[in-house]
Image (spheres, rainbow, N blue to C red):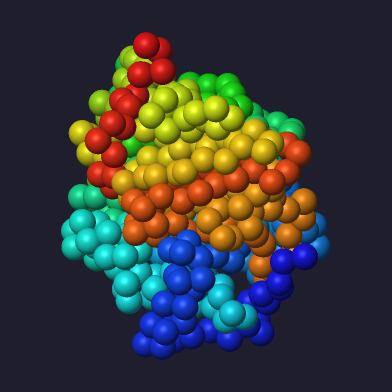
Length: 421
């Protein structure tokens, strides 16, 4: 049994006290750090019940906060929830029965943990990933661009999806995602939907297309593009921001408040419909080749694969020419081991099997109680990644881990559409 780390009783080190314990953790793990599960509730969503959280803990933050339908990985980004806990969305390193924020550790040892290139440019670990697990679809919404988010002191958010088969034994209510807008749609039509907000369903989905979600595939979603994620459990590498604007007024009979449309827009613009519609990237929304330009299928990285193990790209491509994040899926057959060597840091989550990464055990849990420590998640420091980390399958089924990376990590990152070659 892994040790239990209770979020209410495990001592938390303050930011100015993490140095010696961080050094000890890095030495013990040879540059790999154990992370505690990081649960995030959403008041306007219904938990999909597939991310291993014990049934009695779905509302561990309180029913008024909503159910827990997200688990964030290697995050230094705060969740933008009302009535939030002070540390909501932030990942903790756990070592020697104590815990401290990954954010504080990176500030303490930035070059070793994430590399000087990323820290000098962004001053933080600027990305994160999560499991998003909802029972049904969520509202058609977009995430602001960097320019629009800056108007309220935030950062924009592109994101990507991958649908891990291990976490999708059932489809739940609606395994389809509306993405973008029907070619030929006009801004005036979207404005009319906003005008009809208080009349029930404002009809915005009539102007979009739904795409069936397929396990083991994914999508790349640029900022300003409308999307209404469906009910497959989703692994989501993304930029380190929690901005959004909901454009759909009614979902499965539930009202979406206007406040969730304008929460990340300047106060004086909250009733300015032209401004609100103007935050959409129109060209990308009405793209006649939306699938060709946004759909992803895994691509084997032959340079990192060998006998008994396969490393696949699952999130790749660029946003407006920039490599902002990426992700890979490593699979080892029973008894196999490999030397994993990456050019940058990553957040790792184990989705199947049992094994080890360096000196740290890996074990996929069947059920997780809120506040308890697991052995499925680690942060691979930049220093360890570049030196190489040994991964071994010690179980009787494949060992599968997903890991995501920060900006400009790879020189050989595939482009969207390369899976068709």
